[in-house]
Structure formats: structure tokens, C-alpha cells
Image 1 (cartoon, rainbow, N blue to C red):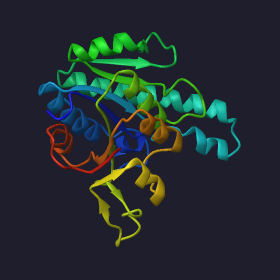
Image 2: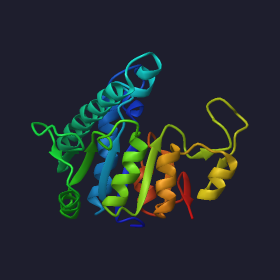
Image 3: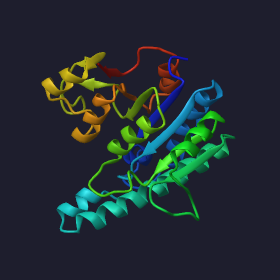
Image 4: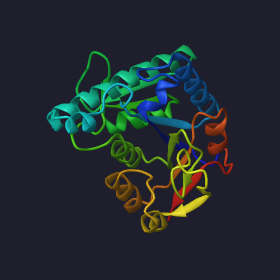
Length: 235
């Protein structure tokens, strides 16, 4: 395997499937199967998942809600998604632990770095919920922070498109895909990979990012096996 320990970042919207809201059980099952295949090959998998399919704090703030209150609601949404993914994984026989940055002991362990790393060493999938536990930080920032803390080899950002393009390929049919980019090239070209805080943190800690299409069956396995899938952002 090219990567021994990965941090998989999934958006909350990805769980909607073809729905307009909530969680698509079929999509959840597909993701769980992809993750199981990687785990069965000995890859240590940690996951950060967004909550945008349920609630987005920034959008609520733009409509007049208190930003801090909205962000806390968004953090709780990520825990709901984490519970759903945990259930789907365990249904396929994958041992899973959900850790939360917000104390919610009845449903999730508190985030403890050494405990998370021990779970990974034992072959358990660790899902990090609750973002960073602080408002004003996105789940992209949470993903990078947790990846650094658990000493992951890479962040795999699963999206609806198969990499980074010169412009949005869903809107611009002339957009062309990059196979690889440096951090500086992303900044120079003004490309959107993650929010600025998350991207800078990743760059400063020399943590590579792979952006790929999570909805295409087999892609996750191909990436951890070393195939050139998606777009790699590295030094």
C-alpha cells in the first residue's frame, strides 16, 4: 500500500446521494463498502465528515442566526452523520469508534489523540465528529488538524468530481484537470481546494492532499494502492 494511515474527508452533502436533504442509505452503504476494502488490506483509516446535508452554520449566520450558535448546530450535525457512518461500517463487520470534539459521552468517546492512534493500530476505523469543537472553523480545518495529530500519511478528500480543475467542471465544460499541483501553484492559480486556514495548515506541516471522486466505485482502493487517481497536492 502506498499509504499506511489515511484521513478520509467526506462532505456531508455527499451522503445525500440523489436526495435534496438528509442521508441516503444506499450511498452510505457504498461508502462503507469502499472503506471496508481499504481496511481489509491493512490500511489504517480515520474519517472526518461534514454536516452540510443536515445543517450549515455559515448559511444560517448569513440569514441572521448567531454564528457561534449556528456553528455549534453544525458540529452536532457532523456527529449525526458520524453515527450513521459508524452504523453502516459495523453492519459490514468493520470495528469502528466515533470520537467527538464536543463532550457527548452517551454516543461518542471524547477525542483523545493517543486513544485514537491506538484504535487505528488495532485496525479500527476512527470517525472524528464535532469538527474542531470550536466555532468559526470548518470541517476541512478539522480534517487537517486531526490528520496531523494522528500522523496520517495523507488527506484524501472525497468529492463529486475526479480532481482539481482550472474551473468548476460542472459549470464550465472547457475546464481541464490537473494530475498534480504544488501548494504554491494552487495559491498562485487561485484554485479552491480547502478553506485558507485548512490549506495553510496542511502546507506548513507538509501533509499531501489528494482530491478525488469518492462516488466512483473502487477509487479509494486504487489511491491507497498507488494508482494515479484524482489530483495530488504536495510540496
